[in-house]
Image (cartoon, rainbow, N blue to C red; front, side):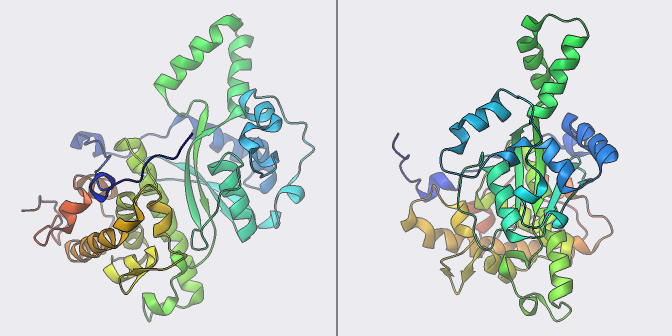
Length: 360
């Protein structure tokens, strides 16, 4: 199979967000089915590396080229066969004590959040859960991942057993699976967030402000990443789209910076993407989000992003200084606009009071 032709800039910049009626954002959204299981699992077994392995047999599969087509992947994930328990935290993680997980709440719905303190453990989790155990590259300045649609053979196996134990015909299980998937996409699949403690996007504390040192900026970076990844969850669940794309990153970074440091600065956003002096660094985060774009169009995209960032800095002034800004409403309003519209000189969206208004 040949790779698809690179996208033109116009095609790349088309928005994928599906407009949602305002009433859909009026209140916090209920948790999806999978969160109840994870919360119960945490209550019973705690948030350790061991309990994580019980929930996610993908960690037992060796990271290797072709792993997603391997016998081990087919056995543990596709056929949902139980693990024999022979693979423990010491054989999976460099620092098992540095692996923990918890349930975090958000207006778009709670999620399991996994923190991996060792860089190697984060990369292992990134590949095992985000790339079906394939050895995909992980950018040096990538320290978080929102995982959606992750198969959960443990939950699926338990659900089937309960279904049969209730006296149902095994032949009816396929139809029952379809019914449950239609009711909730997470009936047999998980969504979760992976985090690794490090300065956000490689930004130094001195670049952020005089009130930050290495310790406080790393702590703020974790809050930034958490809000950033939850924003991806919000757009996936409420706006019908989540992509490795700069449009998603603009919205997620607006919410992340705002939630962590109380403001959005164009210069920080651009540096965080790896854009410095209008040039894209070789290890920039941006390269992760432009894999489908014709490389010759990247300089033009940088111009668009510089204009968008400047407009957002002005439009969002004072927005996050308020107590408890309505995060879902902000996401809804900003997602109404594609990047070319947001780059226009006259574009604006937020009043300082937080009231939304359409741009001219």
